[in-house]
Amino acid sequence: MTGRIEITVSVNGLSYTRSVEPRMLLSDFLRHELGFTGTHVGCEHGVCGACTILLDGRSARSCLTLAAQVDGASIETVEGLGSVENLGRVQQAFRDHHGLQCGFCTPGFLMTITDMLRHHPLESEAEIREALSGNICRCTGYEHICNAVRELAKERGALK
Image 1 (cartoon, rainbow, N blue to C red):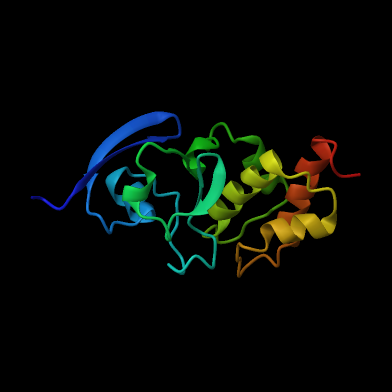
Image 2: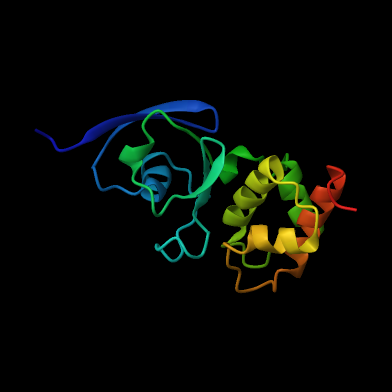
């Protein structure tokens, strides 16, 4: 017995099958097994939000999830939002509003914002700040990040 588990996942629309150790974290699987290094690992306790990905369409902390738990799941990482040459809409708003400095927390914020815009109206400043409260940035002070989300919410017609 090898003690490994075979899993198949879809990441950014492509299917991957790998054999993993039962205790391998999803963050490590994405980064080290599949090469999706945009998923950052910060606190490793689910507090900072840097490792946020979308798991079956909803935000999840990849540092708190075992790779073996996601067999058959659909995962979206920051790499699936766009590229340097062709930024996705959320990435572009972040750039336009200077919502990053060192960039370490950025992937987690982008994935959280993507989930929030898909599933929540974000009709007020308080709702925007609440939506972002699970992600920690030590550089920006959040104002520029909130400005980016405010613009995206206005585009959807949710925010006046």
